[in-house]
Picture 1 (cartoon, helix red, strand yellow):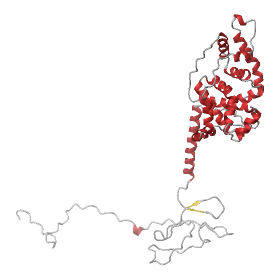
Picture 2 (cartoon, one colour):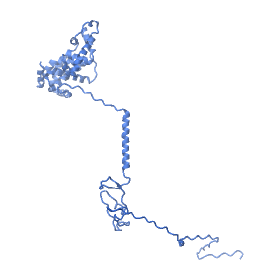
Picture 3 (cartoon, helix red, strand yellow):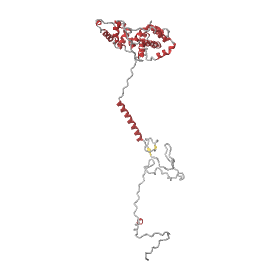
Picture 4 (cartoon, one colour):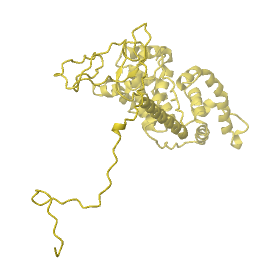
Length: 378
């Protein structure tokens, strides 16, 4: 069936569209999936999910004539997704003839990129431009690798003595490969997955996990994640020490730049803030203290209101060191009092010499000195 008709049937949600696509491409897609995975169960699941994705995203396919290459690209993407779940042991391939055995041995010895390139070209018959779309590589790269890949296959086949004199065509080699066909019940499973209402959740899950489709509908090549540059441990330590020193320096600067005593900051002069000393205490506690943003109240002349002596305010022009605008400040002259001369009348009198006679002892009654006792024998 023509690819344009298949695409129109898929876009119209024709109930038989998925079955028609399977009949046209199912066997080849299964061989492609098995050749990549070497596991019949994985190949079965990859083919089923690829057709679900194709039905859900057929509107993204820009050129309907490229339906075959588009299906191969979707199947390749699903194979990679299935193989990413875990490692699997490839199935053992048993050749029924010597020719099959030699062909399988030579193809299996090729590098994986060359093997996949020759498979799409000679087993599935895709042109180089379609192979480039399936493999997500430039077309020039495909054309440049075809000849070296064929030469490598010929060298592997010529290892036997009987094969040295002739060269086997790559198409005949791939046609002789023992590739298993699709299971008999795979078609019914694919059709059921696309039409069964109970499997709507499964279809939605498979369709929505595919997000990397380009403008033409083909999967975009995977982007390599940028590698982060590893910073050596010494550099990390140097940066940490520098940050620590900067923090300590900032803290020291703030501490030294802070005023030593709290005062009133001038904010109306236009000059940088200058810390001035607080005015003297002239009232009760809390009465005459300066408050930022509020003028200082004048001292009360009432002695009863203030326990301390109040002094009248001195005009600014009479204060030492202060002057009105336009007048030079006058500082009072310092007077030194004359040194006083010694006064003879205030000279200290000399202390009397101590007497050798005993001082009278007062009587117990306190009336006067007691009479001297008569000498003995008088």
